[in-house]
Image (tube, rainbow, N blue to C red; front, side, top):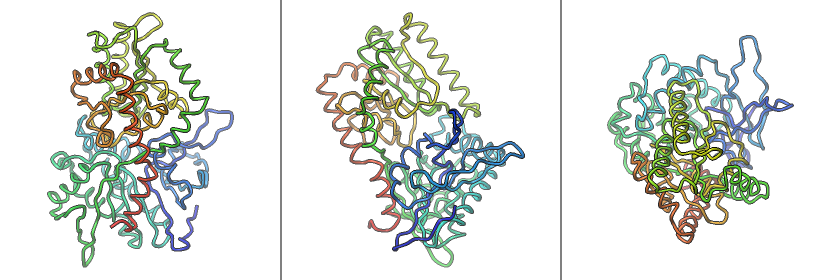
Length: 478
C-alpha cells in the first residue's frame, strides 16, 4: 500500500508497532482477517478512527517454505495497513528471545532473571532495521511517525538517520527500570541512543520518565534538564522531550457495550452458572509471571481458610489469557497456577461448586465485558505493570457505580485510581485484608469509590492520551 503525502498542511500519521491491528482467523466457515484483540490495538485503534493514519507492523504470518503469505487487507475501519515480513528465526531470536527473554523481565524489575545472548540482540537489531526501512519507504515527506513499545527501541535513531525530515515519537507501554537495573544490559548504550533518535519519548508514569533521564545522565554522560535532554546531532544539538503520558481506554465504548441487553443478560447467566454466590471476585490477566496471579490466588484461598471470606458466600473467576507459550518461563508459570487452582479447589471447593473457576483461553470482547458486569470485585495485583488497562475497563463497565477494585501499588494505574483498594502484591496478608475490606464495605462506600474511579477513567480516556501525545510531538503544547 502506498501512502500519499500530506494535504492541507496536515501530515499523515504513521503508527509503527511489532504487530498489526489485524490477525488471520480460520476458525469459521470463511477464513478472514479480523481485528486483533491485543492490548495495544484495543487501546489505540479506537482513537485513530477518523484520522489519516497508517499502521505498519508484522502480520503474524510464518508460512512454510515455498508457501506464499496471505494478502493483507488495505485498511481496517479506515486505518491503512502495511505489513512487515519476518522469518521464523527472526521471530524466535528477536521476539521470544531478546524482547521477551531479556527486555521484558529486566523492565519489570527483573521479576524473572533476564537472559542476555548476543545472537538474540543481533536479531533484535536486524528486525528493528527491517521496521525502520519499511517506515522510511512509506512515510510521506515531513510526516509524523509514532513508534510503539520495547520491541522497537532502536527504530527512532535508525529512522532519523534515514529520514531526518520526519517528526518521530516513541511510547513505551511497559515500565522503564531504575538505572541500577538497566545498567546490567550489555547493549544499554545502543538502546538509549536508539530512543534518543525520537523528538518525543513517552512513558506511562513520571517515574519511568525520570528513570530514563537518569540513565542518559549516568550511562551517556548527558545533562537532562526538566523534561528535556540535548543530544549531539551532526554539527549541533537536538532537544528530545521526555514526558509521561498515562494511557487511557475507550471508556465510552466499554460503557455502551456494558449497557446492552445481551451483555446484561449474559452477566446474569454467568452468575447463575457459577452458583449464584453473593460476591464474585474476578481476575483477568495475560498469563505472565509479572501479573501476580499466584499471589492473589493464595491470598483468596487463605482468606477462605481463615474465615475472612465465607466460602459458602463467595467464589472467584480467574481468566489467564494464553501468552508466549513457546517461552519456558511461561510454561512454568502456567503449570504452577493450574496446580495451585487444583489444590485450592481440592481443599476448599464443594461438589459442583469450585472455590476458583479457572479459564486458560482467549475471551471475546463481549464475553469479557459481561464478566466485568457480573463481578463484584476485580483483583489486579501485578508485581510490576506499566499501566494495566483491565482495571480501567472494569471501571468503565460498572454502569451503576457499584463494585470494587483491588489494585497493586506497582501498576501505573495506581497513580490515577487512588479510590481503589491499593495493596502491595508481595504482601499476602495485605491482599487478604483488602479482600475482606472490599467484601465488607457498605454499598455507600463502594459507590463513593466507584464514582471517583469512573470520573477518572472517563476524563483520562484513550482519545485524550492520543491527542495529548501527538499535540506535544507536533509542538503545539509548550
